[in-house]
Length: 462
Image (tube, rainbow, N blue to C red; front, side, top):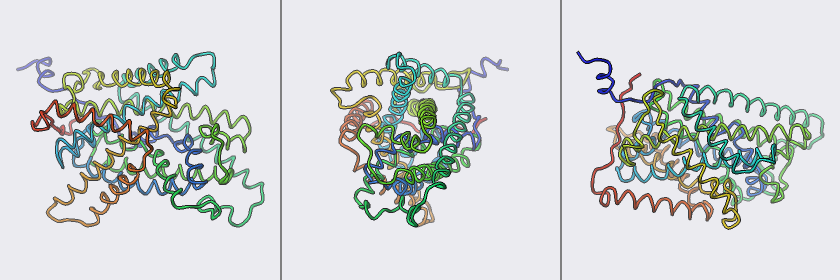
């Protein structure tokens, strides 16, 4: 009879199933942030000429179609590889690899820009410490927490999420008190949705392409499919719930801000702190500082959560041999986490934030700005791929359900429209990233002729 050591060698080490539905919702909400629209509020307001709430609602509807596609595919293929697995299984291995490579860009940039944002925000509190020291601190902090295991990350995510919700409620309470004390005309409460003096369709859709950033990260839930109890149920519910809650909460936040600020533009130097300026108008310096600190905490949560998800995506691709399996497809046996990938994502965030900041003058922007502009490129490649996979899967069913086909088709068309209207920097950086990945994949598979990639779906073991 084999001893325990021999048995453990025979059984591959897998990720630990420890997350329930609300763990997923909390993780998703922290990756996205309950304060998600606050950082980009000024950009959307200037682009859409004040119609921020309308752009957020349109973006929510668009993302719900994609969220349903993610949930549908995760129910069929509960894998940490997410869109990489879905497209590779349903459409073609080469396309699965390309979608996965685009996802890697998105998932690597998210921890990077969160690290840069946290470093800048911390400098406002302790300006005597340099940006580069803060970058080292936050990368080390994110990495240490994620190396502690999935349960530790989940518990901290819940605390961060609840803390941010409290600050949002304080802001909404201050707005309600301010509105109660002023006189306003009958159109006051509807003007945030539609102001005839500033409304233009082209500006509205331009603003919507930026507002979609509010929802970036909801797809990370699908990368946790192998660490979720009952993934075929909970991934679908968690993904849709996170998208819906984010949209409704974000819409309420920006609606309240528009009641205060209206459609007037922000100065170019005020765009990044626009929401804090609105807070100061109703709550003075105290609410201004509270909001600044909250945005720092929000990015702490997002940085930690996005590094968590990036490690799982790289593990899924490594296990499938799209990346070197000996490094990326390995699970650390004690805590059952993809340790190599967590460390690699941390190093990428550290080096990337420092390099982009060092060359910020030549590049025309700091690490946060450049990273944020490029992040959507990879995200929308994944969104389009997952919608396409859900559509193809529906077409192949013995009995075709037209309603189920319309949802992924609508999601694909909307995402393609937004992706085609990304700014020039995002398109250039994204194209460079994708070309390098396709060349690497072609070299690895001799022109994608060899069936090198695999898209394994692990058993639903405990």
